[in-house]
Image (cartoon, rainbow over all chains, first blue to last red; front, top):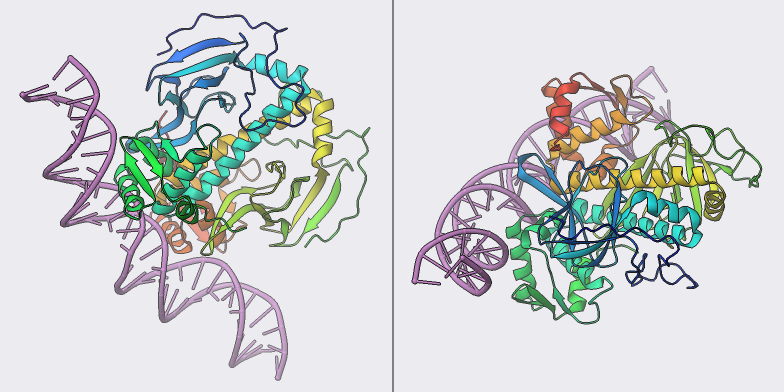
Length: 237
Length: 237
DNA sequence: CGTGGGGTTGAATTGTGTCAATCAACGTGG
DNA sequence: CCACGTTGATTGACACAATTCAACCCCACG
């Protein structure tokens, strides 16, 4: 499903990442690897195209330039779990030790930059700041993974939906407005939240009825942030 | 709840980790930091003692010398999620970016070795092999976290219990025999698997009825590994 | 202008949770 | 040594949240 894949050799002397001089690590809207460089191989993938298959050998790492991607695992009985959704600036492919346990598929058409894992490792070895940024990125992923464990283990359907909308609202891009356009299908959302499509619909409808959201053609507008937050943020402390 | 906490200064010239000369990275039964060294501060914690509290500032990293520990998150309505159980050789405290999202509590009395995070970072900076081992360890944690997402999102109660027993059976120590002694309570297991205590009991009884396990005084003996595996390993591929 | 796939809604079903009672193990103090 | 209280584990009866099954709608697209 990979459309364009000419192999631009990585120029080791090129500026591989931006903000070298930045005082602190990884602002949320920062690219770990500067997309303006010619480093890595540009890859385009169609909607629903498979970027990584379950069982693929580890070897490549991708940074998303544009679009949305999902990490999915299929198990017996046609059951499916979406591990995470990834967007521009996100990096994936590093999570595998030897084989990929999750497939990665394009939710929308995506543009990626592909690197050999060995190249990334080499850069991390030669550059302390980059290594620390990567480390921070991975630790942040561990954190969001943990938060998702709580959602799947202990939250009700209504709470999951609210948490999901807040999560989507909270990501770096498109956060200022309260208009969310969710690129993924109901099935993707359901498999991310450990629910069925029907329950996702019903809970969205409930939010609509309560006047918390407005649903229009795959686009959702949040009318009552406060209500959403009191539903979805069930943390203590 | 920390009992002994004299602060042994870290000797930078001491051999902080073992197997420097080992050809490959992190065998599963290997300590990332050699417990025989005097590096770090020895800490003992009683049963149910709190090692890290929710909301604590990040700053220390612990390696378990002996005992079992749980990472827990409390949310509204008395609900609780156990993120993971950790055992000898495991390392925790590195998952926080600024504040700890999960508390860490002693399931059994534990002996820990405590390090400043900055010390760990410094060692990683000065030693490539150690840095890569740590990296591998963290990535492995991401993997088990992902597997747990699938369990919580898409497995039935029976499958969760079987998967749990297999997971406990599969950890480096005490794996040769089929006698498991589970140090954690039913409540801990339930909160790890996103179930209730009662369901855990019922499913264990079902396994007992089917002759798959024998339950004796907090110790469980696996009589039929094959049956357990066909229940718990619901992977495709 | 059919056709099909995603989305929405309703009714029936069920797996798991809730509530409650009982039991077993253990420590404690009279 | 034995009543007693405590705490965790087990079991049963019932309730309910979410799934399953099914019908229908709405566009997009050939």
